[in-house]
Length: 143
Image 1 (cartoon, rainbow, N blue to C red):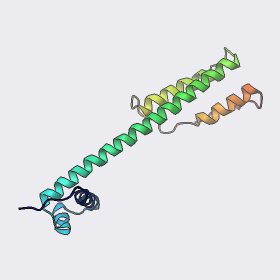
Image 2 (cartoon, helix red, strand yellow; image 1 turned 30 degrees about the vertical axis):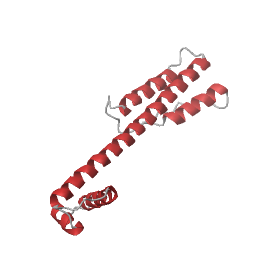
Image 3 (cartoon, one colour; image 1 turned 30 degrees about the horizontal axis):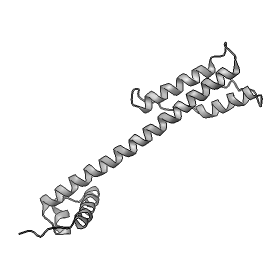
Image 4 (cartoon, rainbow, N blue to C red; image 1 turned 90 degrees about the vertical axis):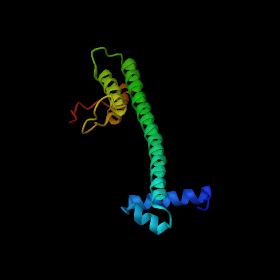
């Protein structure tokens, strides 16, 4: 009859099994090193993998939410600056807002990300400074 394992010991073994597996050790060798059945070692690896995947999913969801919020703020800021500037012929600020919303789509996976996202925040800071009257906007085209 197998002896029952405490939950703490099980979690420790699960962590060790997973770490060894990630290092490329075979399930049979893991079982031998930790003095457990190879089926148990495999089960621990699968459980640890499932837990790690769940953690990564939570982290990814958080990162997506943060990026979505960031681009939403950029778009709102661009629209506010455009409204305050009262220059109907100048569509640059609206283009900035549109690009921010496009980036939100990319973050959400609706569109494939571009190789390089230009520095929108620097551009917005320049626009804001120009509207306030601190400086003029450079018409340099970014590639």
